[in-house]
Image (cartoon, rainbow, N blue to C red; front, side, top):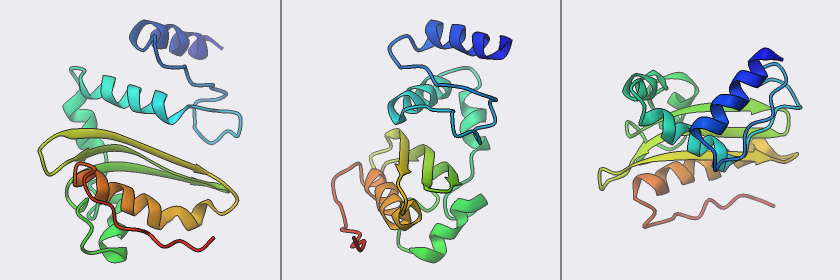
Length: 149
């Protein structure tokens, strides 16, 4: 309970305009824990701008080369996010998510968060891959993903 209070106080001080997360045990593996995509994006942006921001960004897996995001290079070798994004993924039953940073072709760095909550969340991988590719293009072009209903 003391940790939840500390996080709530920190959140109010640093991100007063973003709804705070709901924490149960802090592991992220609880079905009761919640955070909106907007709030997680605000947290990422705030962290990136902090004194430890560069180290934090570098700690995330490089898309196409490290961690679970290395598989993108096999699924879609022409995806522009390969080598241009540092993303952490998350998967639970009925949930598929990613969050991190993408460098656009313009040089702009974007915080990116996508959370799919659905019984067929695993079928959303192609859409998540397309999102990363689209962000690298600075949102200027989209390739349809063609997911079956």
